[in-house]
Amino acid sequence: MGSPQALVLGCSFRPRPRFAITDPIQSNSIEPRPGRREVLLRSSEVAALAAILHFRVVDVLFVDHPTAVRKLFMCKISKLFYNLVEVNSGTKPSYLGIQKNPPSLALCPATNNCISTSEEITDANHYAPPWNYNPEDGRRKKPINKDEAIAELLQVVTSLKPDNFTPRVAERREDYIRVEYESPIMGFVDDVEFWFPPGKKSIVEYRSASRIGNFDFDINKKRIKALRSELEKKGWSSEGRF
Image 1: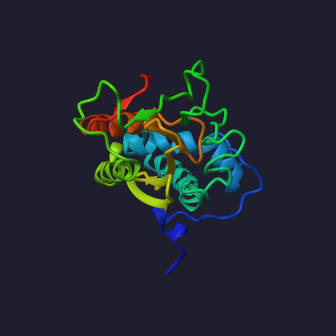
Image 2 (image 1 turned 45 degrees about the vertical axis):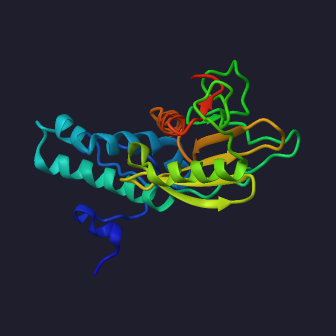
Image 3 (image 1 turned 30 degrees about the vertical axis):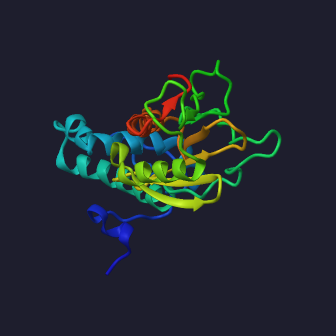
């Protein structure tokens, strides 16, 4: 049996001399198998969009093209996606966790696929307000302690699948939780962190970020809003809106 990549649509995946997608009718040139960095930088958005559309865009674009051209296009896309599947989950960023100066969660990169309570409130693309599990105007008759709040948070996190992303608690410490959310189709992984800073206030800081790509179709914001909505039913509140 051939390699997995060779089985996709009967395509032969061979090394290519350069990275270019050409018109098969106008040119005989061939494109290379893109490197991991080029795949991440140039193609993550294409992959995400194709996953969302369930590849229907192919039928729209090529309904009038000959079968051979459509197959060649699908071979190219399949090769690209095969490379993405190999690297889509990425690796856990080394800077995750509680930062030292000052103590906080990490800031976001410049890309539009991350939100964090550590950002400046004026940064509309990346800032998100922290949560309070004992708000003064909340519905709780009796305040809860940090351990009880962590239990409530974990119950909500493990029971919800926003946008069909599957959650997995990857790290858990006394005041810190990191959850990995895996996308349903391509297996992209987002890291969501929760931190219970020391002090008298019942505040929870958080950060939600995709590992690869430049934008996320607001998936990270929608995820946090979905979690917040469920926590509000338990008496939590947000220190602001976004």
